[in-house]
Amino acid sequence: LAVENNRVAARKRVLKTGYIVISDKAPKLECTVRNISETGASIQVSTTIGIPSIFDVIIDGARRQCRSVWRTDTKIGIAFQ
Image 1: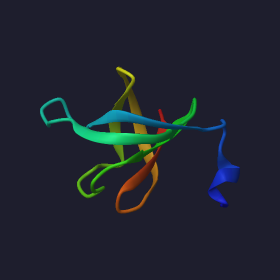
Image 2 (image 1 turned 90 degrees about the horizontal axis):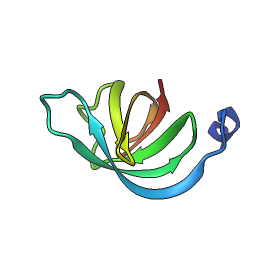
Image 3 (image 1 turned 180 degrees about the vertical axis):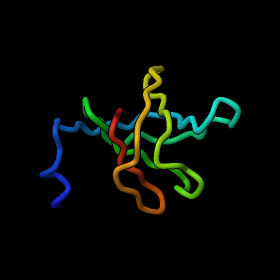
Image 4 (image 1 turned 135 degrees about the vertical axis):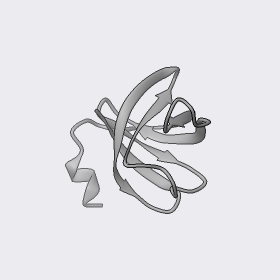
């Protein structure tokens, strides 16, 4: 995969539950964290429709702002801001 060569930090495969926070008023969207590194992660959702390009993600209780770098119908590659 060409994408692998662009990674700044090595990703490790995980299987964790995370949450997407679009706004403080909107309910959190549950997601599955498939892999993670210091600089970003790959998350799986039921659908990427309606998820903006910049949002907060909660992984292991830590809330971080991120932006989507790539997406498919059910997965989003995110870079931490």
